[in-house]
Structure formats: C-alpha cells, structure tokens
Image (cartoon, rainbow, N blue to C red; front, side):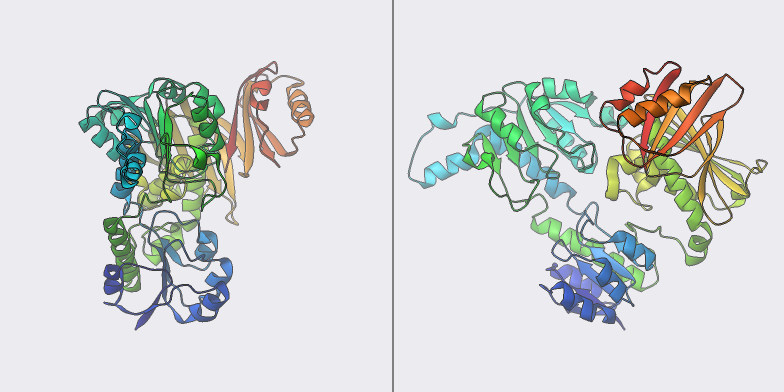
Length: 526
C-alpha cells in the first residue's frame, strides 16, 4: 500500500480522502534534516506553507510520485528539481478564491466605516460616535487591478452593491471585462478616478512596487487602497507617508513585503489603516476546500490517473508525454516569446504545426503554447491543465492549423499572436540534439537559440546600424552575448536579434529607437 506523509496541519477531510488509498502519517514541525531522513519511505508528500521542499528533500524522496501543496503558491517547492525527478507537483489554484475575495471586500467596508477602531473604542467603555463617521461605497468607483478569478468575484459583489467598476488587466479582453460589468482602462486613469483600489495580481518583477509614491500622487485624497494579493506590490512606506500628508484617505493591507510585519510606519497610523496577518485564505471553508482538492489529486495520481492542477507536467499518458515533451517545451518558449512581443492584451493566437508535427496530437502543444503566452500574467498560477480555461476567460481565441508541406525542419511550430498593440509571429524548431532554435521572426529568417535576456529590433538594413547599436549598449555597460540579423532583401527591412548577459537598464529602450534606421525595439525575458 502507498504511503503519504502530511508535514503541515491539514484539514481532516483531506486526510480521510488520502486514507482511502494509502497509509497516512501526519508529522508536522519536522526540521529539514529530519524530513530528508524519512522522505524516502513515502510515495506522496502533502504540505501547506510551513514545509520548504528543497532539492535535497526531493532527491532523498526516491519513491515520491507527487507533492501536493494545499494552497495556491508553490514558492516553497523546488518545482524544477521535482520535475527533473519526474515528480508531479500540484496545488489548489481555486480553493481559496471566495475567501480571498471576501476578505478584500470586508477590508474595504471596514476601512470605510472604521469598524476595527470603533469596536475597540466601545470595548474600552467609550461611546464616541463623532470620531467614526464613515463613507458609503454605494455609487463610488472601485478600481480592480487584476480580473482573474478573485478579482472577478470582487467585481460581481461590488456591482451588486451599486459601485461603478473600473478595471486594469492587460491580459483580459474588453469583451470579458464588459461581461463582468467593468470598464477596462489603463492604470493611470484607474488610479486617478477610483475611490477604492483593490489589488488582485501576482507579484512579478513588473508588479513589484506597482503602487508607489508616483502612483499615489495621482490619486484623489478620498482614495482608499486594499491589498489582499501579495506583499511587495505596494511600496509600504509610500502609503504611510501619503496618509499622513492627507494625499489619500486610507489603506487596508493583509499582505506585506516581509512577513511577519516588522517595524513599519503603518503601525503608528490610526483608523485610516487596517492591518491583518495574511488572513485572505484563512476561512474554515477555504482550508477544507484546498485540503480536499489536493488530497483528491494525490489519490488520483497514486491510482495512476492524471492530476487536474499539475504545476509542472500535463495530465498525459507516459507514452504521449515522452514523445511530445521536447516539443511542449518548444511551444511554451515560443508562447512566452510571442506574448511579450505582442505586448498588452492578446486577443487571438494562431498555432500552426508544420512538417512531421502536423500529424501528431495537437492539443498538448496548443496548451503548452497558451501556458507560455499567459506566463507573464499569471506566473506559477498557470499550468498545462488550466491554460486553456484561463485563455478562454481572458477572451483569447485560439486557431489551430497544420501544414505538413513545410519541410525546413522535421517538425516546427509557428505562433502568431494578435493583440491591442498589433500582430507578431515567431517560428521555432528542435535540432537533432533537442536544442530549441528560433527560425523565423515576423517573416524574417533567423537561426538563434533563445536566451534569458533578448533584444529584438526592427530596422532598415543599412551600413553602420549594427555598430551604432553596439556602441549604445556598451555605453550603458550592456554586454552582448550574440547577435544575428535577419533580412529578406539587401538594404530592405530587417530584424536584429541580440542575446544579452543582463537585462537592459531602465530608459535604454527609448534611446535605442532614437538610433537612425531603427523603427522599433522589444525586450524579452525568458
């Protein structure tokens, strides 16, 4: 019989499900070295946020088939190490959706009516009604940053309360936003007009300190901010200063850049600030939901069935997976690349399988393409299982075509993405050793391996332009690892592809487009 180790407190409902197919040992509070010693006995490991599943633990788990995280984030699991060992990693991406949305709404209402401070006042024996005059949310404007599952639920409730809805989400179609009753706007307009701003986005390099002193300066003095998403999206000292100076009305924060919250100017503020200790998912129902969701997936995998929320590998049979796995990585890389080139809101993705791939099963490659396309928006929350659903919810239409006549390579994948900023296309193939090569960009032939940091330019094929760009990058201390030009005719239009050792410094992209002959430039991080 299989054995499952539960190393963090899990609701009994989850343990009962696991007990149907396995012997379950609940051992919480284990030190890393203790976990390394015993993990080799187990076929599955179920955790929450307390256990850090490191590479050493994974390598010691010689019998592990699956690691289940009862929650959304898997940042405490070395997913790459698990993948290399062939271990499925699953999470519960929707188990705490309602809990998180309701906490954001509760924070908004509590902030509007000063409920925490009024409660404390009455418990002290006071009856001070004048100090706690609040504000109604009815007919006020709420700005929702991120219209995923949580943001969408907040929108539905806010609409029912009679609020006007603005939303910012560069990965959501206008049609989807309108279905939710939201007017889709850019971030600047949202912060200028919203009375309440609630954040429902992952923390990424692009969203870190999204709400900062510059953004706060654009807000109305009556604006209140709510963050129940991820710590670090708000530069926490900035709202503290803004509130003290009367530039905004208040802030309600459930998550912080460093947790537990240490020394902070936010602590010294009064009824204008509400702070809670990361309670977004802390409801009885949410804890039951995530425990059941992940326990069912562990049970299924132990029975030889696919997991519905696998983070690292698709729910495919081993024979299909073995055959298509290299091409799935190719499709995911191309999806990530074309999504960044297209920028903004993607409305249409055309997936064309070429050569020998035209006769293969297409769905895994389409899903892998979507996973790559959505990665910049969703990060670890998108996987091979939910990529199609997430794309549909964002109004992304997918067209699949095949062309067996194209024989430049044994098999290649061509992706074309159309969005609010235009259309871009990229083609890629695998070399004999499995190395990924980019073979075409927007109709220009190239032959380059993808790299972590890349720069693409569109320019006129003219003498001196390569040298000018190299000199400009050198003046910013940017080192070029490789460079290739793709062109159709001499002195016509061309593209340049550069692999860089480091990301471009802020501001350099606009300088690049000032170089005579360069019409556009794009950076990509893979």
